[in-house]
Length: 168
Image (tube, rainbow, N blue to C red; front, side):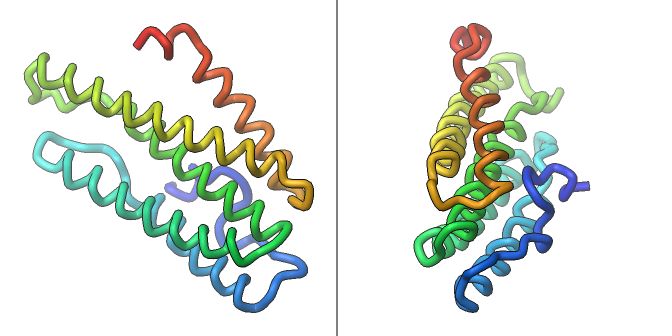
């Protein structure tokens, strides 16, 4: 059920209006990379934790780079969609990093891993928030992207301001 975790319209269902064929093709390629990103599951065991995280980060980098080409070449809806998708992937990875440590880890190693992943997660949440806000601020952004981005930005802003988040 990886596609159930996609924020916004399902990949492949977005119809870009008033875009060139090249931008539309770039967006379709980026959507395929989005699907690949979501297929990398972060459910590590002691043996593969670094490998799983490496694959997820690589999938993120590839998909974000593909959406970046859409963002720079597109206008209106394509630009908004590309920014939103990038934000949503950073947001997803931040949430994915909040997993329970493998039971085989020593408590001190588990605590160190949690601290490292939490710092990385907060960085991803901040990047997601900045990107969501940039979509919400686009005057030419088409629905549903502006509305979705505003909603996600409000949620993330509250999470990042929460005393529980600051105290960690």
